[in-house]
Image (cartoon, rainbow, N blue to C red; front, side):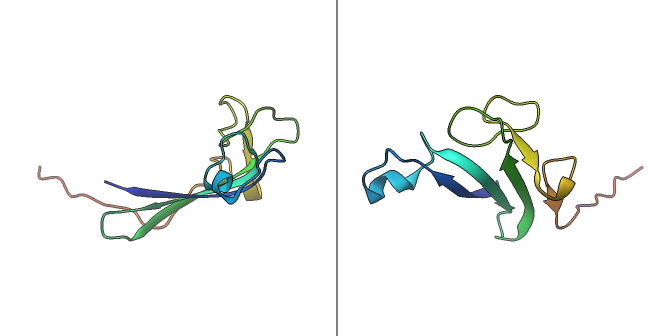
Length: 94
C-alpha cells in the first residue's frame, strides 16, 4: 500500500469561503506535484506537472495524452517529471 500526497497551485474566482479551498474541484490548476510514500513512510517518487497554455477544463492535471486539462513535464522530463528515489531489486531462485 502506498500513500499519495498532492500539492496544487490553482485558482478559482468563484470560491467564497475557506472551506472551498479543501479541493480543486472547479479550480484552474496551473501546477501539480504528486508525492508517493511506501508503508514505512519512505519517499518513493515525485511527479511534477504544469498545465499547457491552451488546456481547457478544471480540476487535477492529466498527462500529455490524457483528458483535459492536459499537462506537460516540468524540466523537460519525457515522463511527466517522475523522479524515482530508489529501486527494488529482487533475486529469483533458478
